[in-house]
Image (tube, rainbow, N blue to C red; front, side):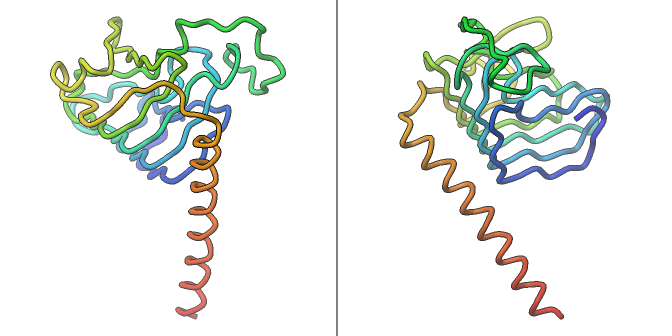
Length: 180
């Protein structure tokens, strides 16, 4: 979060949480191969990246982000029980916010899923459809936007992510035992 730098955030399952948020001077972090399942609430569900003065930046790649698990939630709500009863459709399509013209920002091969299959990125004060970013800014090449998959697919993705985490911990433990 705010001001954090040099993190490698990978193979995590984020449920009811904002994805990659690095602002107020944070830089040089890599966010990859994560599954983000979130309620819409502020138009920056998958990522929110502030610019850093010419040089350091972030990498956001191969992530899968699903927006619109339920109703709109106010920022800071933190619990599905406080979600307002009426969805705000405009927030279902806003997947993230960044300074798209930042020269060292790398974003590619991500998957965005919304109720209607649309994906809009806030670039400073402007908004762009996901499909416009590769040509206009060189961002999000190979990224896709689609309608929500069925529940079985979502559960399968979550199970695969959890199984990968468990396997990774076992491999680490075995590796540590061999070295001792």
